[in-house]
Length: 490
Image (cartoon, rainbow, N blue to C red; front, top):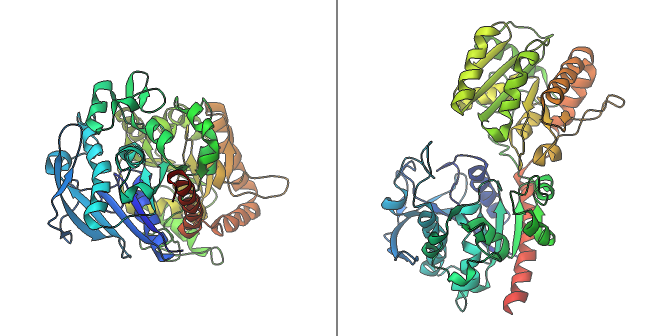
């Protein structure tokens, strides 16, 4: 059955993106549309979004809030390679700023209002267009008010029938504000209780979404299990356990057009699982680019990451001198916390023969590292889904990962007895486990070339397509629509 599906998101690739959320909402709607559904997207019109090519609808959209009505213009464009409309809410006082959520030092003081306008504005836009979705997929705390608005403020309107799905991309970010800011949302104060939006005397927008959504989802089965535990639940594990039957873990896909070693324009040689010769040439070219010796007997270990606590860079920094004493070469590409940028840059002076630290975000280099490296290291504290390990698998670069969230779901641990596996895992995020697992992978590379070749071929044949993920989302949407119908009596 053809369904009408609305995505509301603070980030959508390629228009505005700072992490995995933008990747998901930039691709999933397009694939759902390819399956025959009527899919639309709403996001803010940030300063960094190019106005070129946007159609101005000249629509004065009134958005009620608890801090007064805000009026937005609406512009529109299509997601690339699709006819999926993206509606941009234009309100310069709220969105015409350099950062999406704040500066490097502090969040914007009015973020509660900014994303109240996004959430309520998306619903007001449906009324203005006369287009009423069967299901609305809200994403992360910035759109967490949508389910409550449907349940409370849209009662009696055509939107009240819409099911709501709330997708958690990272539970660590919850939209917490001082208690008086709950008035900004325009919701009745009766909802500011421990059963809804109150959390340790603060507003917690994400918590309210966990209560009000028809169904919940997150971006991998492993993360869905983990966030129901105190270790990963960020204080909300009890609510998530209570709703465990309504929580779906659907593994993200990757863009198989952008990340394809057969056609990738960023890499010097192309290759595939059935014709892998180009990978060795990519390695040699990357070694020359980095100024490292061209050695095929040493594994080249790649890391492309944000320097953030979540990514385990503190433990990585602790163990780097031990790793660089192993028979390997390593390149780290990343940016983030200033101490980490300095550490990974300066390390090159101490290990000039086998290490390079590139402190920048460079799309082309990221592709060349995925293609040219033999092993790819991800020592994350937690990883809701993770994309780089899937890019690595597609390029025959065997991941070394901490077994958490989507990393655990996507990487099969190497079995020395059978040769099975697609990578190497460790469970404890500490220096001995990290060093030991990298040493294990290096030793396997140097002594079991036949096993490494078989693992690469197996890795490159994995299915990480968004079509697979989209079919999982549609199953969830159908369940949500049925449940909503029972709730509202339609």
